[in-house]
Amino acid sequence: MADNILDAASQRESPQAAKRMRLDTDHEDGTSVPPSSLDAEVFVDPHHPNKLLEGLNRLRLNSVLCDVILCCEGQEVPCHRHVLASFSPYFEAMFTSGMRESTQDRVTISGVEPQMIGLLVNYAYTSKVSISNDNVQALLAASDLLEVTSVREACCEYMKRNLDINNCVEFYCSADDHSCERLKEHSFDHILEHFGVIYQKEEFLSLSVERLTEVLASDHLNVPEEDMVFEAAMLWLDKSPTRKQSFGQVLEHIRLPLISPSYLHTVVESLDVVKEQQGCQRFISEAKGEQPYSNTARPRRTTVIVMLGNTNKVESFDPLTNQRKTLGRLPMYLDDYAVCASGSSLYLAGGFDDNVSREMWRYDVLHNSWLRMAPMNEPRFCFSLVMLDGCVFAVGGRGSEKSEDSMEKYHPHTDSWQLMESVGVAEHYDNGCCNVVALDGHLYCIGGSRGGETGDQVAKYNPKTSVWTQLAPMQIPRHHQPAACVLNGKIYVTGGGSYNNNNNWIFENAMECFNPQTNQWTMCASMHMGRSSPCMVVVDGKIYVLEERDSDDNVIRNIECYCEETDTWTTVGEIADARFTFKCVSLKLRRDHGSVFSAAPSGGVRLGQPGIDEEDDSAGD
Image (cartoon, rainbow, N blue to C red):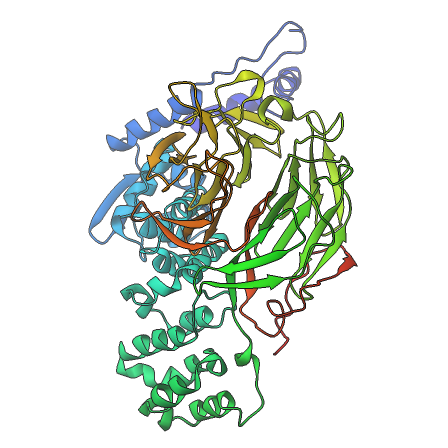
């Protein structure tokens, strides 16, 4: 009846009244401002959204005006259709597309855990949800099904931040199930990097044959010998007798030509499952050289430490095999240059000999030579070179009036530099005395003594907004060249020069760790000895610290290795040749004795082309 009364009243209104009503609400945002009110203003209550949610949630908790009950495995959740439809396209389609659920008082939700329905409904009314290791996979599944994108993304980010050797296989499977590509790539890389530990875990042995072969087929599988890959396949096979029929599919991705002949004969060939399947016999014949090699003869890549100095000599050190090899020589002699690497891309820029250099070079892993790329806009030495989101950033340095207070960005695919002016580099970067690392889309500037500062300062730079943010200071001041690296979403810092309580200059051996999520520093185990300006790299989930000098200016040849899980340091080797300017990076290369490592040490110089040269995966030996 009320509707009829309103309809009748609207019909009796004069044309002038109707026109006035249209004018009053003629703004796109729906505000009602009469044209005659030139001094009118729009009031916006910033607390209104929260108040509205609080009111709706109060109604829900008291079962007031609720018009639907979600039912899931015995759990019932009263709520409001319009709230569900407003935060979930799944419910919007259910309640507005003429489906039978649109008129039902009770709607059954299948395919998710009942507790997750409660969490997501609570999120709809409060904008808050609690994510933990115990519920994150189930919450990801539920938010993916109900199309709650914000919670789905929050679950993925949580899993990326908390990824470790114990959960990476489960997270990889969850990411694959729900098409979370970035999480899948991140967890997959973690499996490859820590394969030597992970392949014995129950979660790995429970992988489907499709997911197992995806892992075994990767060039980046981090193993000291191919024998380990075969052992992993055997453990997986022994888990269930029904897997025998799929073993040929698995064996196809094991690089049998790389297995020692004795192991191939005494272990692989003697297995009943290999003897019984004709397809397996074909792979054995190929491994023995009785048939032409296919891609199974291609060496896998490994992460090595590439060492450079003030000579043109370049070496690699493989911590897994303790092998050293010579790479293509640098085309020049330089001091105080900067290097950075990511994956199989290694860049060297700046430095000085007779003059300060603007040049940049890229190491071509395929041809074992150095390519000259586009030069920087400014000559630089005593600066930092960092890779972030596929680009190279040159930060600060000396060499020209603009160098100290500038940053420039290199785009590999166009072979061009972009000068990023007015970013306040000089306020946060102490040339030659601090360190810069990249993490989660930001650059972190650590240590140094700009303008007499204490040496414990840390600043974060966002390249997208050109905004610097001051962060929590380190627990130990590091005035001069601390080493820094990123491991498992955290920043580790050690070494560097500072003053002790007696105001004496010392070289630090203490290490501390920064958690960007909490903005807090925590102390870790200390190195065996202090180092002035060491190099710090990550290989196979461990931190390696190399070279530089102690407080008596003696060269430290020992290589120290830090294990995050046990918080311990061990000495794992020595550096053969001392270098005055020592630089090192971790780089992915093939364990291929016929190309990169054993190529002529003279190297070469070529003009670079836009883009990043990768190793030719289609090439055989």
